[in-house]
Every structure is written in C-alpha cells, then in structure tokens.
Image (cartoon, rainbow, N blue to C red):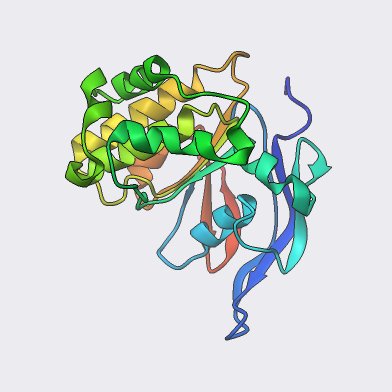
Length: 232
C-alpha cells in the first residue's frame, strides 16, 4: 500500500459499562489507511457507535490505545487530533441563527483561530449536496432534518479534516437527503490536495448503503468487530 503508516489505528481498545460492568467493546485492533472507505454494519446495540466514539476520543478507553499516524495521542493533543479526525453524529446540533452563522461558529474556537470562514468554499460544499448558495441564508430553525444534516456536514467539511467518522448520519433521513449526503461525502473524499489522502468510516444499519459508500466492510456483533471478506 502506498501509505504504510495508518492514519488512525486502534490497538486492543476495549470499553465497559462503568455502572453495570458489562462489556461494550471487546479488545479490538483496527487500522485505517489513507484512501480507505470503510463501512461498519451490525444490529442496534452491538457496539458500532461505542467503537466510533472510542476512535474519536470522545469516550475514554478502558484498555488499549488509539494512535494518529503512528503516534499516541496525549491529552494535550486531543483538540489537534479532532481537527484532523471529525466525528458526525446522527442528529446534528444546530445553533440559533442562519446556516452561515452555524458555519462560522467553529472559527470562533481556539483550535481554528488560524483559519477563516470562506463563504464561497462553503457554498461549493452545499452545491455538492444539491443546495444553492442561498442555502447559507436559511434559518437553522426552519431546516428539515435532511437540510440540518447537510448543514452539519458542511460545517465539518469546510474545516478540511483528513478522516470522517460517520455515526449513522443518514439513518433518519428521506431518500433524497441520503443521496445528497452520500454525494457530499464522495466529493469531500475525492477533493483532497493529495490524491486519496483522506479516509472515512461510515457506520450504517443499511447494508445496501454500506456497499455504495465503502470499499471495505466490517461488521460488529456483541462488541466484537469482524472483517467481512465477501466482495462488495
């Protein structure tokens, strides 16, 4: 493979329910290389989201380690890691105001003080999802579920992450919105400065979607991650 060092790697990561003591994620090894599009399917409650949140460093591991480009991430380095590795949930949180107000918000955070909002770039991302430039002027309170998710994706993608961790982002959307999100992610994946330098993991309950969006498929059952060897 052209990229020998994985972008993201997990070694023996495991999670337990602190109150009940039950295993949420059995010790898991995983590597994600640049250029990979991975899908993870499995029943509800099987640990898919637990695993993705662990990779995003949103929840602490009970065992194991997550690395970025071969280096362990120290606590002080977590904000920089999350700038490179973006997590998008099923239900986006939108602020009051317009879509543009929501898109401008990340640039008020310390992590992004070195970059500035670019309306034209944001409009190009919205266009990739089938939305015109005036989409940025819509009130967030008036967006449909699909439009809110598109806005959430544009808010993240404008920041040029290297890796997307997508936690069933289209599970509650209508077919047209699903297609728009898939098109937007596809445009992002192909739009890096270095060909195939990006990667994504898409957690989905929809096996057909997994076949559309990924070239590598895994399944999660009762906290155990398994590689699927069948051709997609």
